[in-house]
Amino acid sequence: GAHAGVQEAACRALGNMCAGIDATGHQRRHLAADAGALEVTVLAMGGHGTHSGVQEQACWALRNICAGMDAAGRRCAQRAADAGALEAAVRALGGHGAHAGVQVRA
Image (tube, helix red, strand yellow):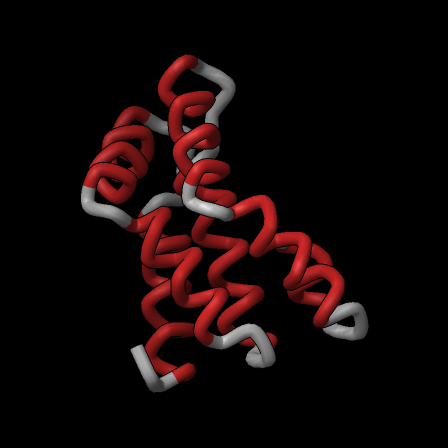
């Protein structure tokens, strides 16, 4: 998407919907990943690399979607890595060193 504010809000919504360690949180994370949330979040980060709000909220979304140390969480983390999330998070950290929100979420 061309509008950074929309991307930021969408990433925030994904992050919030995928928060929680209960069974329904796990289900929402699985649904989000299956819907392509990891890939589009990485795309948002690449398309708005200079926008700290997008970077912060995208890191938050990735973090929540990939939460969990079980087999499903590990598969999700690998899928995120395959989509370029590790590189995107490193770019966010390097490009937004003075932005506390990015530093905490990435």
